[in-house]
Structure formats: C-alpha cells, structure tokens
Length: 224
Image (cartoon, rainbow, N blue to C red; front, side, top):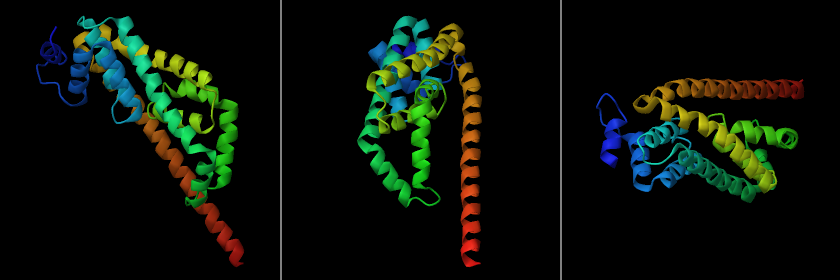
C-alpha cells in the first residue's frame, strides 16, 4: 500500500486528506510504526496536534496493513512516554522555587496557591498523572507539575505508560475497526474535549471573580 493510496482511502468521500490527517498518514506510511510514535510524541509537546485524530489514523493505517495493531499501540505509547518525559524535564528544570517566584509577580495569584497545589499533588499526584493521560489538554500539561514536584521518575514513567496505553488503545482500536470511517471517532472525542474546555474556562472565571471580589473587600476594609 503506497502513501498515495492510503491517503486516498482515508476519506471515503474521495476528498483529499490534508492538514494534520494528511501529515500523520504520510508520516506513518513513510516511517511505519515509528512514524506513529513520532506523531504522538509531537502531539504531547504541541497540544494543537490532536491525538484524537492521530490515534484513529494509526489504527486505520494498521488496518491497511502498513503495520500491526500491536505495533501501533507499542509505538504510540512509546511516543506518549517520550513526549511526557520531555515536559517532565521542563518542569524539573524550572523547579518549585521559580514557580513560586513567578506566582509572586502574577496578578490575583498568591504563593499560597502554589503551596496548596504542591500539597494537593503530594496527596493525589499519582492519580493526577494516571487519569490526566486520558483527559484532553491535561494529558500533556500534567507532566510539567510532575517534573516540578520531582515525582520519582520510574513511578512517573509507569503511570504515564499505563494511562497512555489505555487512552491509545481506545482510539487506535476504534480507528482499526471503523477503517475508512475512522473520522467518526473525532466527532465524539471533539465533544469530550469541548466539555473539558468549558469546565476549565468556568473554573478560571470563578477563580478570577473570587479573587477580584476578595481584593475589593480588602480595599474597602483598609479604607474604612
């Protein structure tokens, strides 16, 4: 199966497959399983590259005989771990001291917020890393606080591998089973991602409103 034929089969309507989908299929066709792993590693580092597109495409490409489903799962999970380790290294290099220093300069943010987050991560960090690998947006960024807090590396790798394998298995298997209809997965995943974005936006809005209200109350008390 040549790259052109797979690209053509990727859209049953006959329309050309371009953008992220075209790039991902071409990469997998050129490099095989390692290409799928490279695409997912880059997705971890650049979240605008959606795993919800790349993973079903890996399953679809496996259904065309380019590589096996087992190979797709192995390479995409390896890519997930490599990308996560890169972000873990960023967090570890940044460190808690710099995080506190930045918090002191940010409006509406207190050093106590960093301390509370650190305490929360000490209690729930393992669950956050494991389940965070299965939540859009968080699946990439959860590696940074793990690095900042210097979670033991073997523990981080084990949790990241387990969470990534579950997430990848769902999407790769769906793409393999659906074949040329792989793009149906994107619709369901897109809905889930939009829900996560709405929740994050509401949480940030609540935080800002609460802090602004607290600042106003303090100013009134000081002026009284």
